[in-house]
Length: 297
Image (cartoon, rainbow, N blue to C red; front, side, top):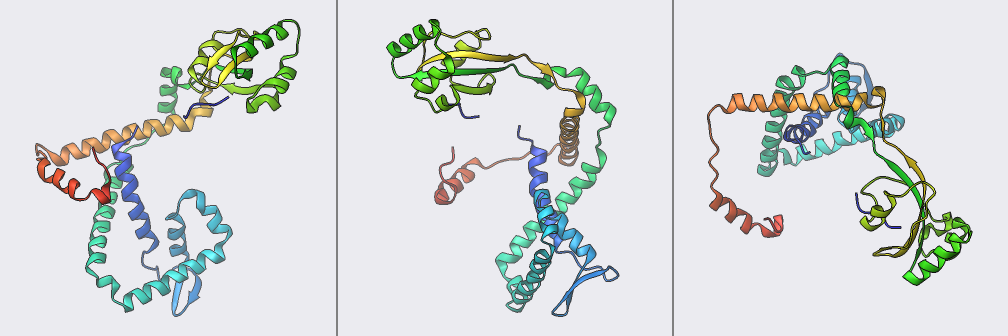
């Protein structure tokens, strides 16, 4: 049986881009002279504070690996020192393109800091707020109706009708599926497992969601052939308990507050100013950069 293939937030998009540069900058921050030195090399040192900032600059999922392989991680930090030293010797830091990129990065870092001060530090969500949201939006935290079914897939309607008669006469569904189904689920006796609305092809779902537990369908045609379906289990919707969704509720409310705060900040800074776009020039730019941008509607 083949399954079908399974809101972007403007504040989060800006913040995500900006923090990449903010954290990267933190990883390259100046050493704190009075901090504990944890590594020395070629006249340089890595302090505990610098190591901490570097760890914070990498994605959460990689931090445990970095700490587990800390010797290698520190050696990589030292390698950056040698690369930086060579780049300075070649005066690459004075290159016009590099300086332009640094200006762009600096701008994003400063903007990220402003957003941190005016948005991040001014919004929070209490446990009581999260609980109130949960209590008034319980419909959002319901598990969907889940079905479990088995099926026998054959190529023709005649084959399906013959097997249906055999099943009606007492043939075992699972054994018949193993012997006659052309689907990969045959080795499991036709078992598809649990699924919810929208995961299977429409023709299959239209039939199975109207069946009773234990019922075997008449032949059902789909793009894959003809199915005989047996509904083996039905799990009704249920409410997820608050503790299991508490983090989800917290993050949702926090993002809503951040977005609201971010938009308020922009409105305050923009005032009555308007953005006048020269669409003719913009379209000409896009047209002249087709190889870089690809097709743009």
